[in-house]
Image 1: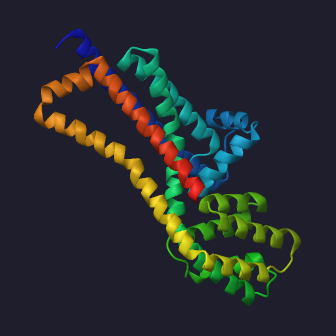
Image 2: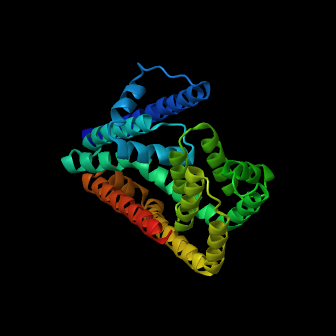
Image 3: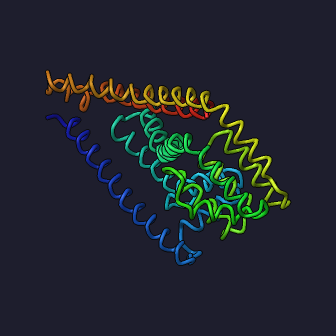
Length: 312
Protein backbone atom coordinates (compact mmCIF):
# COMPACT_ATOMS: atom_id res chain seq x y z
CA UNK A 1 0.00 0.00 0.00
CA UNK A 2 1.49 3.31 -1.08
CA UNK A 3 1.85 6.53 0.89
CA UNK A 4 -1.15 8.09 -0.82
CA UNK A 5 -3.36 5.16 0.11
CA UNK A 6 -2.20 5.31 3.74
CA UNK A 7 -2.93 9.04 3.90
CA UNK A 8 -6.37 8.50 2.40
CA UNK A 9 -7.24 5.80 4.90
CA UNK A 10 -5.94 7.95 7.76
CA UNK A 11 -7.99 10.86 6.45
CA UNK A 12 -11.16 8.77 6.42
CA UNK A 13 -10.49 7.50 9.96
CA UNK A 14 -9.76 11.04 11.18
CA UNK A 15 -12.95 12.34 9.60
CA UNK A 16 -15.04 9.56 11.19
CA UNK A 17 -13.40 10.21 14.56
CA UNK A 18 -14.07 13.96 14.41
CA UNK A 19 -17.66 13.38 13.30
CA UNK A 20 -18.23 10.90 16.13
CA UNK A 21 -16.81 13.29 18.72
CA UNK A 22 -18.99 16.13 17.39
CA UNK A 23 -22.08 13.94 17.47
CA UNK A 24 -21.50 12.93 21.08
CA UNK A 25 -20.73 16.52 22.07
CA UNK A 26 -23.85 18.03 20.50
CA UNK A 27 -26.06 15.19 21.72
CA UNK A 28 -24.91 15.97 25.24
CA UNK A 29 -25.42 19.67 24.63
CA UNK A 30 -28.98 19.01 23.40
CA UNK A 31 -29.81 16.99 26.52
CA UNK A 32 -28.35 19.71 28.73
CA UNK A 33 -30.43 22.41 27.00
CA UNK A 34 -33.54 20.28 27.37
CA UNK A 35 -32.98 19.91 31.13
CA UNK A 36 -32.30 23.63 31.46
CA UNK A 37 -35.52 24.47 29.63
CA UNK A 38 -37.51 22.34 32.03
CA UNK A 39 -35.90 24.13 34.96
CA UNK A 40 -36.39 27.56 33.31
CA UNK A 41 -32.75 28.38 33.83
CA UNK A 42 -30.03 29.51 31.43
CA UNK A 43 -26.56 30.81 31.88
CA UNK A 44 -26.04 33.86 29.70
CA UNK A 45 -22.30 33.32 29.47
CA UNK A 46 -22.55 30.06 27.52
CA UNK A 47 -21.27 30.04 23.95
CA UNK A 48 -24.56 28.74 22.56
CA UNK A 49 -26.56 31.45 24.32
CA UNK A 50 -24.22 34.19 23.11
CA UNK A 51 -24.55 32.82 19.61
CA UNK A 52 -28.35 32.69 20.02
CA UNK A 53 -28.44 36.36 21.04
CA UNK A 54 -26.43 37.24 17.95
CA UNK A 55 -28.76 35.19 15.74
CA UNK A 56 -31.83 36.82 17.30
CA UNK A 57 -30.78 40.09 15.65
CA UNK A 58 -31.87 38.53 12.34
CA UNK A 59 -35.55 38.18 13.16
CA UNK A 60 -36.86 36.35 10.09
CA UNK A 61 -34.39 33.40 9.96
CA UNK A 62 -34.33 33.14 13.75
CA UNK A 63 -38.12 32.94 13.95
CA UNK A 64 -38.22 30.47 11.04
CA UNK A 65 -35.74 28.11 12.70
CA UNK A 66 -37.34 28.47 16.12
CA UNK A 67 -40.78 27.61 14.72
CA UNK A 68 -39.46 24.56 12.87
CA UNK A 69 -37.51 23.25 15.86
CA UNK A 70 -40.40 23.74 18.26
CA UNK A 71 -42.95 22.26 15.87
CA UNK A 72 -40.80 19.09 15.72
CA UNK A 73 -39.95 19.35 19.45
CA UNK A 74 -36.23 18.97 18.78
CA UNK A 75 -34.15 19.60 21.94
CA UNK A 76 -31.96 22.24 20.24
CA UNK A 77 -32.75 25.94 20.07
CA UNK A 78 -32.10 28.09 17.01
CA UNK A 79 -28.66 29.23 18.19
CA UNK A 80 -27.46 25.71 18.95
CA UNK A 81 -28.84 24.45 15.65
CA UNK A 82 -27.01 27.08 13.60
CA UNK A 83 -23.83 26.47 15.59
CA UNK A 84 -24.12 22.75 14.82
CA UNK A 85 -24.48 23.53 11.10
CA UNK A 86 -21.44 25.84 11.26
CA UNK A 87 -19.26 23.21 12.97
CA UNK A 88 -20.33 20.57 10.44
CA UNK A 89 -19.54 23.03 7.64
CA UNK A 90 -16.01 23.55 8.94
CA UNK A 91 -15.61 19.81 9.49
CA UNK A 92 -16.75 19.13 5.93
CA UNK A 93 -14.28 21.65 4.54
CA UNK A 94 -11.42 20.05 6.47
CA UNK A 95 -12.54 16.55 5.47
CA UNK A 96 -12.85 17.63 1.82
CA UNK A 97 -9.28 18.89 1.79
CA UNK A 98 -8.02 15.65 3.37
CA UNK A 99 -10.04 13.28 1.19
CA UNK A 100 -10.17 15.05 -2.17
CA UNK A 101 -7.14 17.43 -2.07
CA UNK A 102 -9.11 20.07 -4.00
CA UNK A 103 -11.12 23.23 -3.46
CA UNK A 104 -14.12 21.61 -5.16
CA UNK A 105 -14.11 18.68 -2.74
CA UNK A 106 -13.78 20.98 0.28
CA UNK A 107 -16.60 23.27 -0.85
CA UNK A 108 -19.03 20.51 -1.83
CA UNK A 109 -18.46 18.35 1.27
CA UNK A 110 -18.72 21.43 3.51
CA UNK A 111 -22.00 22.40 1.86
CA UNK A 112 -23.39 18.87 2.19
CA UNK A 113 -22.53 18.48 5.87
CA UNK A 114 -23.46 22.05 6.76
CA UNK A 115 -26.92 21.78 5.22
CA UNK A 116 -27.58 18.20 6.37
CA UNK A 117 -29.20 19.14 9.74
CA UNK A 118 -31.62 21.57 8.10
CA UNK A 119 -32.48 19.07 5.37
CA UNK A 120 -33.07 16.40 8.02
CA UNK A 121 -35.30 18.79 9.96
CA UNK A 122 -37.41 19.62 6.91
CA UNK A 123 -37.69 15.97 5.86
CA UNK A 124 -38.82 14.99 9.37
CA UNK A 125 -41.40 17.78 9.27
CA UNK A 126 -42.73 16.68 5.87
CA UNK A 127 -43.03 13.11 7.13
CA UNK A 128 -45.01 14.29 10.15
CA UNK A 129 -47.20 16.46 7.91
CA UNK A 130 -47.99 13.46 5.71
CA UNK A 131 -48.89 11.39 8.78
CA UNK A 132 -51.29 14.04 10.09
CA UNK A 133 -52.89 15.16 6.84
CA UNK A 134 -55.69 12.60 6.71
CA UNK A 135 -56.42 12.94 10.44
CA UNK A 136 -56.89 16.71 10.35
CA UNK A 137 -60.54 16.66 9.26
CA UNK A 138 -61.69 14.36 12.13
CA UNK A 139 -59.70 16.52 14.53
CA UNK A 140 -61.42 19.73 13.37
CA UNK A 141 -64.81 17.99 13.58
CA UNK A 142 -64.09 16.96 17.18
CA UNK A 143 -62.93 20.49 18.01
CA UNK A 144 -66.13 21.91 16.47
CA UNK A 145 -68.24 19.64 18.67
CA UNK A 146 -66.29 20.67 21.78
CA UNK A 147 -66.55 24.32 20.73
CA UNK A 148 -70.35 24.10 20.54
CA UNK A 149 -70.50 22.36 23.92
CA UNK A 150 -68.45 25.11 25.60
CA UNK A 151 -70.75 27.88 24.36
CA UNK A 152 -68.96 29.09 21.18
CA UNK A 153 -66.88 31.64 23.06
CA UNK A 154 -64.04 29.84 24.80
CA UNK A 155 -61.44 28.67 22.28
CA UNK A 156 -58.98 27.53 24.96
CA UNK A 157 -61.66 25.57 26.80
CA UNK A 158 -62.68 23.91 23.54
CA UNK A 159 -59.05 23.00 22.84
CA UNK A 160 -58.65 21.63 26.36
CA UNK A 161 -61.74 19.47 25.99
CA UNK A 162 -60.56 18.29 22.54
CA UNK A 163 -57.20 17.23 23.92
CA UNK A 164 -58.61 15.60 27.05
CA UNK A 165 -61.09 13.54 25.02
CA UNK A 166 -58.11 11.49 23.71
CA UNK A 167 -60.10 10.71 20.57
CA UNK A 168 -57.71 12.26 18.07
CA UNK A 169 -55.96 9.82 15.75
CA UNK A 170 -52.22 9.24 15.57
CA UNK A 171 -49.72 12.14 15.66
CA UNK A 172 -52.47 14.77 15.35
CA UNK A 173 -53.12 14.30 19.08
CA UNK A 174 -49.64 15.58 19.98
CA UNK A 175 -50.00 18.50 17.54
CA UNK A 176 -53.20 19.71 19.22
CA UNK A 177 -51.70 19.11 22.66
CA UNK A 178 -48.77 21.33 21.67
CA UNK A 179 -51.16 24.04 20.45
CA UNK A 180 -53.16 24.02 23.68
CA UNK A 181 -49.99 24.00 25.81
CA UNK A 182 -48.46 26.90 23.90
CA UNK A 183 -51.65 28.97 24.05
CA UNK A 184 -51.83 28.35 27.79
CA UNK A 185 -48.23 29.10 28.83
CA UNK A 186 -46.36 30.96 26.06
CA UNK A 187 -48.26 34.24 26.24
CA UNK A 188 -47.78 34.62 22.46
CA UNK A 189 -50.91 33.53 20.63
CA UNK A 190 -49.56 34.50 17.21
CA UNK A 191 -46.38 32.48 17.71
CA UNK A 192 -48.35 29.48 18.99
CA UNK A 193 -50.64 29.53 15.96
CA UNK A 194 -47.68 29.93 13.63
CA UNK A 195 -46.00 26.85 15.11
CA UNK A 196 -49.24 24.88 14.77
CA UNK A 197 -49.55 25.85 11.08
CA UNK A 198 -45.92 24.89 10.47
CA UNK A 199 -46.51 21.49 12.10
CA UNK A 200 -49.31 20.66 9.66
CA UNK A 201 -48.11 22.50 6.56
CA UNK A 202 -51.22 22.56 4.36
CA UNK A 203 -53.75 25.16 3.30
CA UNK A 204 -56.56 23.78 5.49
CA UNK A 205 -54.41 24.28 8.57
CA UNK A 206 -53.83 27.88 7.49
CA UNK A 207 -57.59 28.47 7.19
CA UNK A 208 -58.14 26.87 10.60
CA UNK A 209 -55.44 29.07 12.14
CA UNK A 210 -57.04 32.18 10.66
CA UNK A 211 -60.35 31.25 12.29
CA UNK A 212 -58.66 30.68 15.66
CA UNK A 213 -56.73 33.94 15.32
CA UNK A 214 -59.95 35.93 14.87
CA UNK A 215 -61.63 34.14 17.79
CA UNK A 216 -58.68 34.68 20.14
CA UNK A 217 -58.05 38.30 19.17
CA UNK A 218 -61.61 39.60 18.92
CA UNK A 219 -63.65 37.08 20.92
CA UNK A 220 -66.21 36.57 18.15
CA UNK A 221 -68.11 33.33 17.76
CA UNK A 222 -66.66 31.34 14.86
CA UNK A 223 -69.00 28.33 14.83
CA UNK A 224 -70.30 29.15 11.33
CA UNK A 225 -66.75 29.55 10.02
CA UNK A 226 -65.71 26.19 11.45
CA UNK A 227 -68.81 24.52 9.98
CA UNK A 228 -68.03 26.01 6.56
CA UNK A 229 -64.41 24.87 6.80
CA UNK A 230 -65.47 21.31 7.65
CA UNK A 231 -67.91 21.28 4.72
CA UNK A 232 -65.21 22.43 2.28
CA UNK A 233 -62.73 19.87 3.63
CA UNK A 234 -65.24 17.05 3.18
CA UNK A 235 -65.84 18.08 -0.44
CA UNK A 236 -62.11 18.20 -1.11
CA UNK A 237 -61.28 14.86 0.59
CA UNK A 238 -60.98 12.92 -2.69
CA UNK A 239 -58.69 15.57 -4.21
CA UNK A 240 -56.60 15.51 -1.02
CA UNK A 241 -56.16 11.74 -1.37
CA UNK A 242 -54.93 12.22 -4.95
CA UNK A 243 -52.42 14.83 -3.80
CA UNK A 244 -51.28 12.48 -1.04
CA UNK A 245 -50.61 9.78 -3.65
CA UNK A 246 -48.52 12.27 -5.63
CA UNK A 247 -46.53 13.11 -2.49
CA UNK A 248 -45.88 9.39 -1.95
CA UNK A 249 -44.60 9.11 -5.53
CA UNK A 250 -42.27 12.07 -4.94
CA UNK A 251 -40.84 10.49 -1.78
CA UNK A 252 -40.27 7.16 -3.55
CA UNK A 253 -38.49 8.99 -6.37
CA UNK A 254 -36.27 10.76 -3.80
CA UNK A 255 -34.87 7.49 -2.45
CA UNK A 256 -34.48 5.77 -5.83
CA UNK A 257 -31.01 7.27 -6.61
CA UNK A 258 -29.67 6.01 -3.25
CA UNK A 259 -30.93 2.50 -3.98
CA UNK A 260 -29.40 2.46 -7.45
CA UNK A 261 -26.07 3.80 -6.17
CA UNK A 262 -25.97 1.22 -3.38
CA UNK A 263 -26.88 -1.54 -5.84
CA UNK A 264 -24.20 -0.44 -8.34
CA UNK A 265 -21.46 -0.23 -5.70
CA UNK A 266 -22.60 -3.48 -4.06
CA UNK A 267 -22.38 -5.40 -7.35
CA UNK A 268 -18.88 -4.08 -8.00
CA UNK A 269 -17.76 -4.96 -4.47
CA UNK A 270 -19.22 -8.45 -4.78
CA UNK A 271 -17.62 -9.37 -8.11
CA UNK A 272 -14.32 -7.49 -7.83
CA UNK A 273 -13.68 -6.23 -4.27
CA UNK A 274 -10.02 -5.31 -4.78
CA UNK A 275 -10.60 -3.19 -7.88
CA UNK A 276 -13.71 -1.65 -6.35
CA UNK A 277 -11.81 -0.73 -3.18
CA UNK A 278 -9.03 0.82 -5.24
CA UNK A 279 -11.41 2.82 -7.41
CA UNK A 280 -13.87 3.98 -4.74
CA UNK A 281 -11.39 4.62 -1.91
CA UNK A 282 -7.87 5.03 -3.18
CA UNK A 283 -8.35 6.54 -6.62
CA UNK A 284 -9.02 10.34 -6.51
CA UNK A 285 -11.31 10.12 -9.53
CA UNK A 286 -13.40 7.43 -7.85
CA UNK A 287 -13.77 9.50 -4.70
CA UNK A 288 -14.69 12.50 -6.83
CA UNK A 289 -17.38 10.42 -8.57
CA UNK A 290 -18.88 9.43 -5.20
CA UNK A 291 -18.84 13.08 -4.11
CA UNK A 292 -20.67 14.11 -7.29
CA UNK A 293 -23.22 11.35 -6.71
CA UNK A 294 -23.76 12.55 -3.13
CA UNK A 295 -24.31 16.12 -4.39
CA UNK A 296 -26.86 14.97 -6.98
CA UNK A 297 -28.73 12.90 -4.37
CA UNK A 298 -28.72 15.88 -2.00
CA UNK A 299 -30.14 18.11 -4.76
CA UNK A 300 -32.83 15.50 -5.50
CA UNK A 301 -33.92 15.62 -1.85
CA UNK A 302 -34.12 19.41 -2.02
CA UNK A 303 -36.27 19.21 -5.16
CA UNK A 304 -38.46 16.60 -3.48
CA UNK A 305 -39.01 18.90 -0.49
CA UNK A 306 -39.87 21.80 -2.81
CA UNK A 307 -42.39 19.71 -4.77
CA UNK A 308 -43.86 18.38 -1.51
CA UNK A 309 -44.46 21.93 -0.28
CA UNK A 310 -46.12 22.78 -3.59
CA UNK A 311 -48.46 19.79 -3.27
CA UNK A 312 -49.36 20.37 0.41
